[in-house]
Image 1 (cartoon, rainbow, N blue to C red):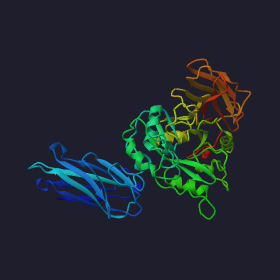
Image 2 (image 1 turned 45 degrees about the vertical axis):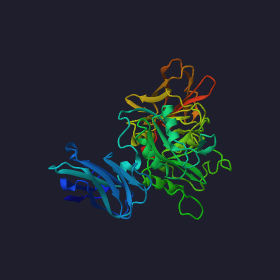
Image 3 (image 1 turned 135 degrees about the vertical axis):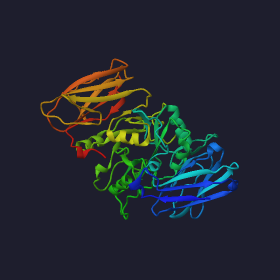
Image 4 (image 1 turned 180 degrees about the horizontal axis):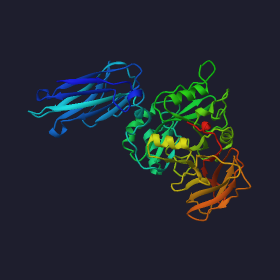
Length: 485
């Protein structure tokens, strides 16, 4: 057998091109034999991704695939997969996660069948630290079109402190599968399972993503410290969460580590009390935190009412942080109408696609609202215009003192409710509440700019004053340098 190896530049310079290309011929005398194709993995690699093409498939040549690292066998998938990935924390089913040692690896190819007088070819492309595989368990968007996508960004399973009742009625660590199943029943489009500090749940999620092909699984974890909790979304890499006396890291180091790994950070339940009932749950860092490292704030946690004081304080300081919600569910078997059940609340994101990058970019953009009780159909959006200038929810509009701003609020599935405007975090006499009288309605209001820096957002309450929806602001006069990355 002849095979060729070509080495390319490191991924950071060449992506999306493969780092290594392996290819070769298979002859009839190699039927019922094994082929080993070696390749070198450089130091510092934390993930290997392989795409394999059997170019003789149409001639009934069968090639089965596997891989070994310098020390051990790492899995085999036969002929049922043409691509796989394996990393320190997760791997495609059939393959083993774990440390990625530098040195000579081997692609293992078995030949169960090749016909006489047929010469077949194969080709394998290998990537090191491929960015896509670090941030997503799906190899393509679950839905490619832009739109509003509904999800839950905070939940726990057996990989931390999630529990549910067993078949015999005992409280047991709750399998990850049940969380995905409950989210699917709720009709959610995406979820982030955020077990505390660990990376162990990612391997299970990679296995589940193929089955739950209508429910996007976003890599997440809750970085739990003594001084506050924060979710990291969008990476499977380990992030050192240890913030304590005697350790070199602080919150800034933690958040920089998350960003270096490709994640965005959201501060969780910052107004919660800290104590023996919920250790470290409140936001009490001993030193000032660089909030430019933060993308969002969990304003609605579980079945609680919106807690906006901390968020408003950050907005006042010029940080455009996106408000999100999360059920913080620890019991996937809770009935779906119960506050704190999966999807109660729901975070609704306008995204370019149902993909990890789409959802994260949507959160960054701020075009997000919180469906406080987790309905399947309530909608909220706001736009602002002044002359030829306009902005959507999450956007910024530069104004002069003489500008009159027209606000248009779209509300759906909220008839009988009331829209409340908040200017700089408080109700304003110039923006009176408006009644919602139709199933799908656009409410228009005007506001006179004074040329200063402000933000306007809306909430929707039902007839009893119970909050239903909370929207993110439109910003006026915020400098672009204060926008979150």
